[in-house]
Image 1 (cartoon, rainbow, N blue to C red):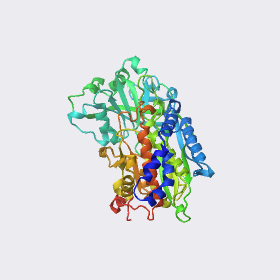
Image 2: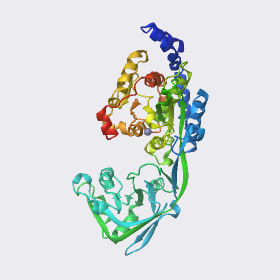
Image 3: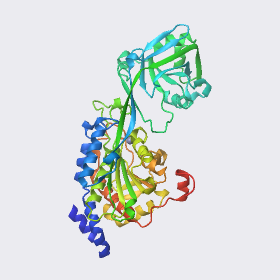
Length: 508
Ligand SMILES: [Zn+2]
């Protein structure tokens, strides 16, 4: 492989140019199909349990990346002379056995967690909270409006069944205190719902708080029926799906007190950072950042949306973003083994918490271990092992002259047969959905590489056998040549001024 690539390069026009490229070719040739396959198999193995943030398996992958960085001779770029930057997290464990919903009204009562009521998802308030109860009747298709006064701060009952999502989409923006799904399941299905056991929710105290999903509980139809009768509402009115307009009906005189018991533990999650110092005395103080996220959504108990299929309950995340993590490792190796170092320094970073809300990159952007003003570009790689053999989508290419640099690099390396194309999924808002966004917001020009979405996205079937390692190796070589061009360029990459105004704000 290596030999053949060297031949291709010397066949390019211009002997001098070819000779200059030779040391680079040695770096590119260190990126091999076998390496990509081997590393994907390690990172996305079932034993890694889908690398949820935080988890011991995520820590194991972070340590694996750090070990490779060290082997390649990279300098530690994390905290206190290590390859790791840890950011703090709070892990809340909700205990159904001691959690209750108390009913005050004409007939006071109590629902016990894990028996009468299940906490099925969402971010319940730690501790107690009380609110009046309302029942949403009717169908989202039949017109009618819900106003904030009828829903905000209230405990909202919805029927579980067809049309639920459309109704929830109208209810959630109005900020209910909690949602209770009234479910007419037989007991055999009830027993399989989440919420019977301790559930875990992870918070990032350093991330900007957004409106999370409120606590979502489930109760049986009979249990809800007894409560509704007190408030003068028939439980059957919930089932009038198709014909009546949407309405919020108060359960008069009924207040519910949620007492959700939880234990909070302090935890942390890692970013792994290695630095290859540049060769130019002045320019080595500037950096090209190469990033990917090493976390994924774990198993169903991680609460990140992994759904079991048959006997398989591990969301391996081979493509998302095992593929990007492998690309960053391979790129670190390529730059470290090229016989000439680029002028500027390179920072290789694999982050975590991406799936929970771009947490690791957000923490680095707020607590950078090299000055962000000296980071001239971020090349971010997320999901690059699937789909068409000969293309990669490059998101954000219109925002700076990095897009033009990429086009010339791709044109000079047609042997790689990877064509950079624009955003193939504009409706998906991909620019906001991976780690580069945290750097773009702070003024760092970025390119985001992805081979895009597929039916295995966030499924247990995103497994190592589906990765096209041959394509990924060619893609990684393209990013290697691009990184080299950017690290050696005389002028720092420049934002398109309109994009800068829109994404970063202010003037440029
Ligand atoms: Zn993902």
